[in-house]
Amino acid sequence: MSRYLKAAALFLVMGITIAGHGQTPANDSELQRILSKVRENYSLASAWHFEHKITVEETEGTGSAVKLAEVSLITANLVAPAKPAGVTAAALCAERCRLESNTTERGTTTLVRDGTTTWFYTSTRGEYMKGSTLRDIASSVSGPMLLAVHLMPLENLGAEAWTDVRLLDDGFCKSTERNETVSSSKLL
Amino acid sequence: MDSFRPGQPPPAPDISMFSTPSGLIQLLQMQGLANLRSPGAYLAATGAAPARTRLWIDKERYLVLRRSSTQTATKIGASLAPPQSTTQPLAPVEVSLRMEDVFSRAQIADAVQGSVFTFEPPAGSREVPNIRTPAPQTPAGTGR
Image 1 (cartoon, each protein chain N blue to C red):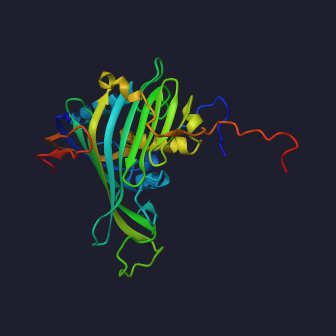
Image 2: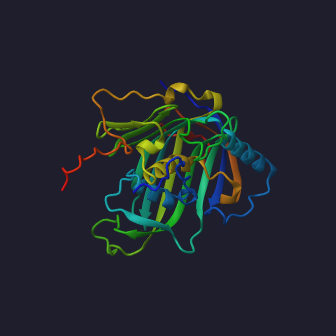
Image 3: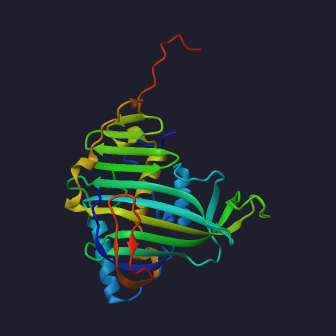
């Protein structure tokens, strides 16, 4: 079943520098209004569910592009009652969450916390661990790194990380439920 | 070695360094999510322009639906170029990195279904001890 996420889309382009070295974004009221709404959405979200596919390619000289990574991610989270909302590391998996990654070579890994039990399943081994908290099934290195994989695509919306932000155009794009490419009739 | 202190939450990762394609591929490599058979280290090229990112934003819900980034980076490690290339292995090489992140689902707040937070072990899977399960005690006098 495919459910369409029909949406009129705005195209923004920006330069990203490492946080702390940014400059003031373009002083455009419409652009600032849009960015403010987006940041507010992500910083105040008490629950979220994102499914997306990340592809990274490398091109050396005039050669053809080589795919370095292609990973599908499911990132869902419910912030604990009375806890600070927002798409942040502190909120992720503190109450309920689902962090799933899938690649052709490495299969699927699934981390689910249902509020009382935390599960970590690896499809290639057909094995799972369970415990009370994230600390029971991930080390102090692998746990934060796993969170980073799922948080990175949803963060960095802060103004301090952006320079030279421009609003490109209105357009239209749509995507299907899973693993379909968003297409647009008016890409710039 | 686990550096957690009992009762303390895990440290919050600073993920700002992973916001560029070069940082992201490093992160995916560390998690075993990259395809690389000859992994290299990717760094922002000295003097190059910062990574450029284009966002597609749903203007009804103000959610990011797609993110596309390009960056000129320096790769240190084995070349992915064909064997006939004269590129020396391990020599720093300037490469262009492109990252596409396409969202097929973007929901916040009440739209999130509670069923996504449930898990049933698949048939045939088996449970293994978690990392905090105490190791079996060796009875005194039986060890070497």
